Structure formats: C-alpha cells, structure tokens
Image (cartoon, rainbow, N blue to C red):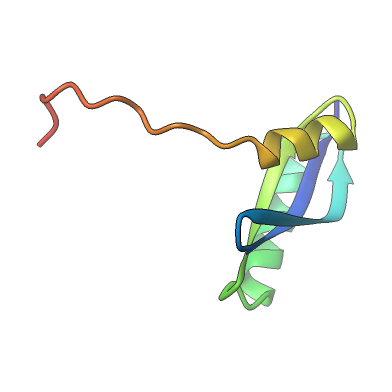
Length: 76
C-alpha cells in the first residue's frame, strides 16, 4: 500500500485535501514531506503523510475527526 502526501487546509468545518505525491516506501514519502514543509508557507495548511490502500481510503482517514484521549487525572 502506498504512502500519500497531502496538503491539508481547513476552510471552516471542511478540510480541503490536495494530493501532492504517492510513494511505495515510507522513507521516500518522509523525505519528500520534509522537503515540502521547508519549501511551503504553512500558515494556512499542513503537509501530511497518510498510509492507505488507495486515495479514497487515505482521504477518508484524513477527514476523520479524532476524539481527544480521556484524562485520567494523573497527567501533570
């Protein structure tokens, strides 16, 4: 399964996703994502790597809202 690189922008409640590249190996995807982060103005966006069977699965994972971990009271 490939690793996809996306530019993710938040427009209100909607995430705008722009696929930038796909790589078969994480090492290559990571190197390209780091390069893009250095070259891109990240004021209104993020560069993210996502692993997926296909583009649709990758985009669904990026759009999924994650809930915060519950607090146990032991955190400092």
